[in-house]
Every structure is written in C-alpha cells, then in structure tokens.
Length: 48
Image (cartoon, rainbow, N blue to C red):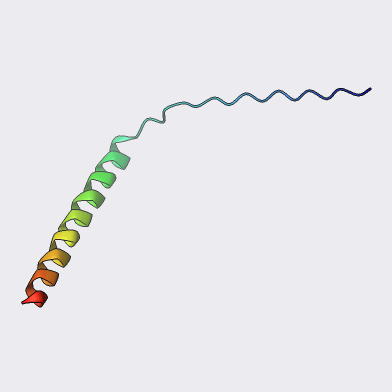
C-alpha cells in the first residue's frame, strides 16, 4: 500500500500600499466619479 500525503500552507499577508500608489488610486477614483457625473448629466439632458 502506498500512501501519499501532500501538505499545503498558504500565507496571506496584507499588502501595504506605497504613498505614490495611494495617490494614483485616489486620482483615478476622482476621474471616474467625474466622468460618471458627466455621463449622468448627458443622459438627463438627452431625455428632455
């Protein structure tokens, strides 16, 4: 009889963001929100 045992360990660590990455993400979020508002206004104007 052959017995194969596999052991797998997964370690999850929280990745810390650099200041540059955090600023980039904040700018992307602002641009996304601005574009979303523009599209909403455009759709609202086109409905009338």
